[in-house]
Length: 460
Image (spheres, rainbow, N blue to C red):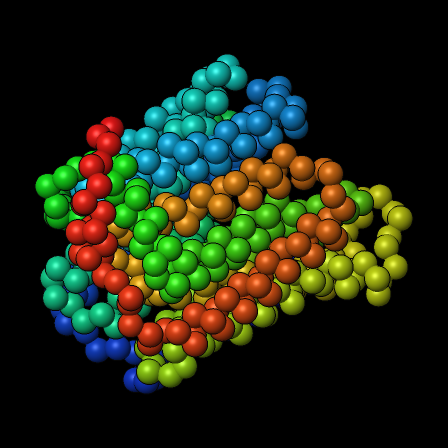
C-alpha cells in the first residue's frame, strides 16, 4: 500500500505544477511594480507567521503526552485554547480596529512567542497559560493581518481585483508550501537531530521574531473606525448592529462558521478514520499530501478570481457541495465495504477511498480561504473589520469546544454526517448570498454610528 501514498502524492504534485505553469493571460492580472513590492512584503511576513504556526501544530499533543498527561488533561488544554480564542481573543482582536492593525500583528508575534516559551515547563498551570496565550494569538492571526492588508491595499489606491492575487498567493504559500516545509523541518529537529519535542516551538519563536522585526520596520499603521471615541463596548455594539442589519454580512458569518467548524472537526477525525484498527499510516506524508491538495485549490481559486465569470459567490456553491459529499465517504464506505477485523497492518481499501475523498475536501479548503477573504473584503465595513471577523469566530470556537468535549460520545460516522450537513447548509446559504449579492446596503456604517451615538456608551 506504500505505493498508493506515493502515487497520490505524485499525481497531486503534477496537477499542482501543471495548474500553475499552464496559466494563460486570462488567468493572470496585470499589476504594477509598486503593488508587486507591497504584495511580496506581505507574503514574506505572512509566510513567516504561518511557519511559526505550522511548526507547532503536529507536536502540541505529542509534547503534552511526553510530559505524562493523559487524554483527558490534554483535552482540557485544547478546550482552553479554543475558549481563550473565543473570549479573550475576540476582545484583543477587536482592539485592532481602534488601536491599530500593525500593533495587533506585533502583539500576535509577542503573544505566540510567549506561548512557545511556556512549552519548556511540564507544569500544568504553565501549559494552560500557554494555551490561553495561543488562543489569543490565533484570533489575531486570522483577523489582524487580513484587516491590515485590506486597509493598506485600499489606502495605497491599488485596484480592488488585485487583492485576490495576494489572497490566493498567501494561501498557496502559507497553507501549502510553508506547511510542507515546516513539517519537514519539525521532523528533522525532533527525529533526525533528536533535539526533543520542544525544538519545533523554539524554531517557531525564531520565525515569529524575524517576522515581527520586518513588521516593525516596513509596515505602516492603519486603523478601522477613525472616530475619537475609543469605547470597546460601542465597537462591539456597532459590529453587532452591522451584522444584524446587513443580511450579506450575517450570511457570510454563518457560512464561515459552518465551513471552519467542519474543517476543524475533520482535523480531529481524519487519523482515526484512516486507521480504525490501528493501521500503520504515514501521518506526516498524508499531511503533506493534504497540503498539496490545498495548494491545488488555492491555485485554482487564483484562476477563477482573475476572471469576470464565474463570480466567487457562484462557484463557492459548488465548492461547498463537493466538500459536503467528500465527508460523506466514511459513511458510504462503512455500508458498502466490509470492515476489516485485523489489527495493525497497512491502510485498508476503505481507507484508500476515504483518503481520496479527504484530498478532495482539502482542495475545497484551498479554494475556500482566498474566496472567503475576497468576499469579506467586499462586504465587511472597513471601520469594524477585525471586530466583525472575530465575532464570526465565536460560534466556531463554541462548536469546536463542544466537539472536543464530546469527541468520544458519538460514533465517527455521526460526526462526519454532522459535518456534511453543515456544509450542505453552507451551500444553501451561499446560494442565498449569491441572490442578494448586488442588493444595496440598507444602512451604512456612518449612519449606524450616528444612530447609536444617541445612546450614552459605557466606558471600559
